[in-house]
Amino acid sequence: MAVTTDKHRGNGHRQDSAMRSAPAARQTATPAAARTERAGLLLGAFGLASSLFVLTRLLEGWRVSPGSTEHAFSLLGQRLSYPAANLAAWVILALAGAGLAVTLLAVVAAVRELVGARRLGRWLTGAQVGLVHGALVIADDRPRAFCAGLISPRIYISTGAIAVLDDRALQAVLAHERHHAVRRDPLRLAVGRVFSEALFFLPGLRELIRRQRGLTELSADEHALWATSEDRPALARAMLVFSEDDSGEVVGIAPERVDHLMGAPPKWRFPVLLCAGAAAVSALVVAVGVLAGQLAAGTATLAPPFISRQPCVVVLALIPCGLALAAARVALTVRRRAS
Image (cartoon, rainbow, N blue to C red; front, side):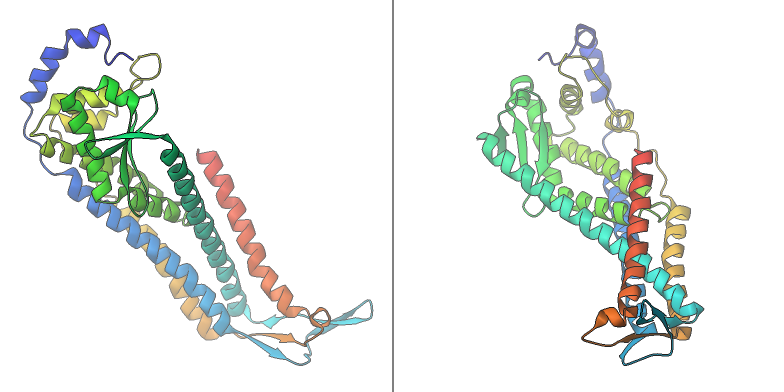
């Protein structure tokens, strides 16, 4: 595969001169990436903790006891009981349903990440053909270089990339990916995706996670420049190689990465208001759970061993499960429309 088109070759010397004369790289993306990551993790952890909190309030606000109850009706000759509760208890039940939905979404997203990582790991194990500068070489004619592995990340580069990269560009690529491996970025990004999918309703969280991915790449670019003694042309050539499609045409390089390579700081402001709104939503859930839990008075009865004769506990369990399934369905619909 051709590395560049004739037009790019014609301007190569001028571009190299411009890049070499660019101001020295400042570590601006690295601290920005760290702040964004911490904010996303804190908001995600707070949101998930709020969901689990309302589940515990459900256990405290509702009392399940054996024996008969006055809240019952007859149906087809069977005496069926039903839960008795005040408004606060029903609020707790609704919040618990939402909390259960969030928990289920988080579990499903985490399992999906683990399964995907294991599947990728098995494929990479079978595709390995060698080792170069500490990176595992995989058999693939397309130029590829990436870091994979949640617990013990490794660097992978394809035979196609080795074929088209010169030594300086190859060193820049490996330095970029080595930064991802040292920081365990695959695991960090996977955790962010889990929070983003489970807590889709929190304002600003999805934007934080999306921005975290971009800043992570800029941070790795900064490390590559530092490791290669500010060799901007080498990194630029590598970026150009990985941005080409199978026909050799350039399909696009992120403009922000190009600007950052030329010495411009990331053009992004931390979304303070959105983060404050997300924290306020989680705090509101906790506050409502605390207040409703203090006033909640719900009772349900259980008459073993014939639960079918006193099924109020089953009904009580089905309500949050139904709410959880409904919330999960809405979340999937919103994500499909957004994509």
